[in-house]
Length: 569
Image: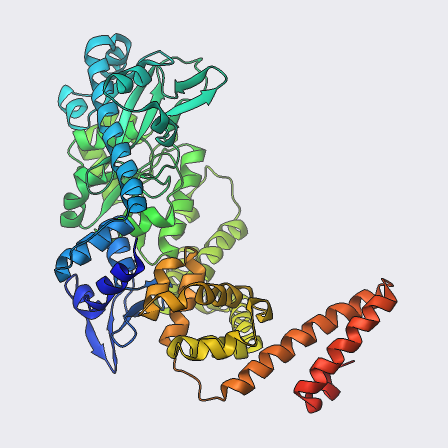
């Protein structure tokens, strides 16, 4: 992608106008605020800076420029976000050969998944005798099978491969799809003799498959899912959400099960506000995705020990992310599928009405054999990781009322020392490397200062690892961009990108840049001196180290003699 095109797209799409077209922004001084769209919160901590053309949530840490916002909010690719914004601004979007190649490959993988789905569905009709028998045994209707496009993978090492080759798919792309393995004999189908469940993105594209074995002794486990590919990241999607998201939004709560068949049974029985977590623990990404439609999560997992533990973990994660969680308790021998078949809709509706909040579920549980202290510690762990003060207080009140202990004792056991330690460490990190932080803010506010800094320093002078990474990005790209906000697109690591956004958001310090450069140098030399002293103390190469030490002393003396007296020995 030509950087000048990205700069043009950034310049012609005011971030306030673009984000304001998705949801209302309220002016707050020179910035704009809203409740963050990427996590649930009661008070707005999502800040948009028109001057700097960036956004930053001070609750969840999410940050970026107008391109990254559109990409992350709409859950589309970087290139798709660029195209969308280019079209909005009336800019002709020109892809380079590299871009076209990358995008063409991604489009081809989507096409392969569509063809693969057609192949699996055709197999079910023509060759899926045992698969059909299994579906009949599980009491799934033909309407459900058709709606969710359930198929069958042949018991063949090359059935899918040959089908795709006949449809003019080049064999070289196959290993990029996650549908094939490779050994000394060549490429082979991963999914064999399995009932196949296509996984759709929230936009309706088939991006992965889940396969259930039809043979009890088959290798690979009962279920296998597609691995991570260019179009699918495990733990980022929810099975069924494409079909149920509007019902979830309308009813304002979601039933969350673990497996495909549990979800299908729920949907078939009229519980159309359901999703499945694809057999994984409910991840932060899945919680964020579902939070776009509701903040009320009802965990409907298996009634056995493993299911109860999974429900507790999932509810804990939901609460930590600021959403609401309840657990629907099933009998020890039931899963959602079997419970519905045995007891019917009304019984499950009663279970949903009587769903328990996490403290009550843990308090009343007799199957996990946990003593009261262990149960309380589980809840304290959740409480300690909740970031919103009101949510913490409400949760503490729930624990106190459920376990019949004083709310004061709960709050006093909130492990305040832990939070104080974290905050102290954060302050220490900022304070310890404040001069590095100040230097970066000065450079980012005024690009012309970069040359002055670069003449005297390189990234090695930054003792903070994250500030070192940011300076490296600045050094590599600052001469080639018009807007500093454009650097955000070049930082892949989310923690580094969020710190970068913080620096952009903060006021520029009123300090002499030459003095800041001197301080950065001094801290670097002091750090090296400390390491040399340690090696000398350990009895290592005394002569060579002493020479290095003397050279460092001279450098330090040349910067600031007053400081040297305090720090040299």
